[in-house]
Image (cartoon, rainbow, N blue to C red; front, side, top):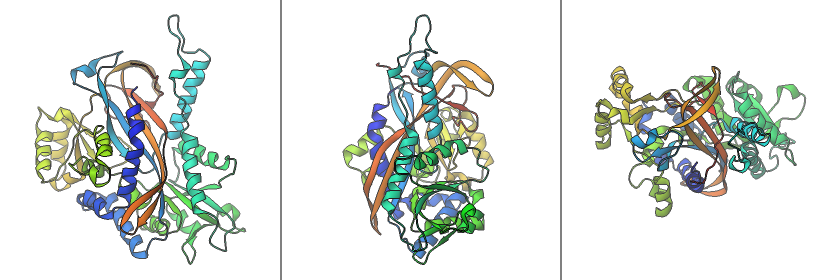
Length: 452
């Protein structure tokens, strides 16, 4: 698996998204077409403007990012190789800057595959798996280290009412993905110098159990410790608030309370907005990367891009509309909305009919992305249906952990921490379009590294 290029370029990509998170004007221009058609974008931007009017009291931000890649064969026909890898390059599927899931699951699956290799479970009469070719994965440790670094950057309690500081996980009520979040929380408590970590459901509980001090420190009163002093929150780690339905009036008030606090946000609300596909599309425009990176850095990042087009009335948008409605070209594309969690994309010959069913005024909420053509390999997948064999394709996610300080109210940032946090690896049957593990399309996997 060719991972070297992505591991080399990701810290640059992380710096890019940190810079975008501090550039209100650039980000607004990238997503402005979403604001009248995409409810989530509109509500987040509205909360940002309200927080800006209140004034920000924290100039440090944190980010746990995941950049997803697939191998892209040089020609469509060469992608049909099974059991070998043709000439390929790594191409970016998407960049995720909010509530990046899967890190813990990927960590555990890698541990499982390494254990099974150690005991010889995969060895056959003619094959013997080499443990050195199965990379270890330290996602949990890396993510906890980033949150601990942010916690330390915040420092001691600033409010006289509080005796300790802590990291606060903001999670969805009745969260079915709790196993992906809890180990990070445990890892904070289990550090040599423990970092207290608590969790709170997004929405009403935020308003009931937290409040701002006069100088806007975020004070959390755990309901099970009502008789003790409140805890001052150093870092807010958002694992909720990525769906429009979460932002009724209570949800808006809760997010605004968090955003206007002195706690370090992971991420800030502008950092959240960078996760929209319109940002990814805007960065593919000529000269866009050079606004934030050196020419050499921009060239390295651009090598991982495929073409992504808007569906507006620009020259590129008109070209995309023609491609999306032409049965001879549409198979080469994916239509992507600005929604999180997978399972929302429209593929190939389903695109024209779908566009016909959507008011043309809403087309601007979508981007048209060139379809990556990964090589096909033979493998076994174990899922709810049991063990199945067949042709599969895989997706590599590289995790980045970063901490930065805003240079000035006008933007710019100084990096305090920027490193590759680890990786995720997902595999699905080749005849299934979506990769989402949560929705049952793919499986967490571990790469077996080859010298080729």
